[in-house]
Image (cartoon, helix red, strand yellow):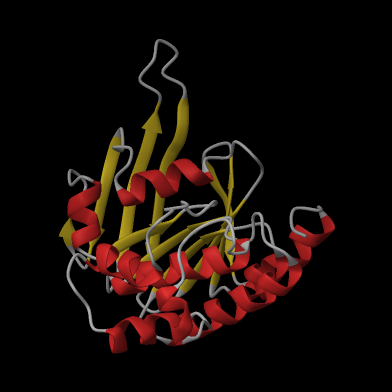
Length: 231
C-alpha cells in the first residue's frame, strides 16, 4: 500500500508557487486509481513526487508502512515503484530482449521475458526485434510496459498512456490494463480517457494542486462527461 500524507510541493524559484497543496491519498494494493483534472492541476508533478524525481516540499510518503519520503528515484525503483513515460524512449540497436534484461537489472531467461511480452499481448517473436522507428507507437508502449513488468514492479504509474497511439493500439492497451489489474499490481494512471477511467476502482480529480473530488467511476464519470473533462 502506498500512502501520501499532507504532501505539498512548491517551486524553488523566487516565486515559490505552490503546485500541490496538502495531498493525502491511499493507493491500495492490487487496485487501479485514475488521476484526472485540467492541464496544470498538478497531475504530472504528483507522479514525479511519487517516483522520486521531485522531492516533496512537505508531507510524508510511505510504502507498505515504510517511510520513503527521503528516498531517491533509484531506491524507490528498487522497492518496486515504476514509471511509464508518455512517449517511450527509442533505443536504436537494442533488441527487446536486451531491453528487458536492462530493465530487470539481471540476465533473465527467454521464458521469463516471453511471459512479460505475453502479458502485454505481444508474441515471443518480439524478443529479437530491434527497438526502432519500424515499431508502431502502440508496440513501443506495450514493450515499455513489458520492461516495467520485468522489474517485478508492484506499483506502476502511467502518465497519459493513450498519447500518440492509434485506436487499435488503444484497444489493446485497455486489455493490458484489465489484465494487470487482475494481477498482483497496483496501477496509477493519469488520463482523460473515459474508457480508462471506467476501469478504475477510484478516480481522483485534481484542480489547482488540490483534490477536488474522489470517488468511484459510477459516481464521478457522469459529472466529468457533462463537464467535458474526459473523452
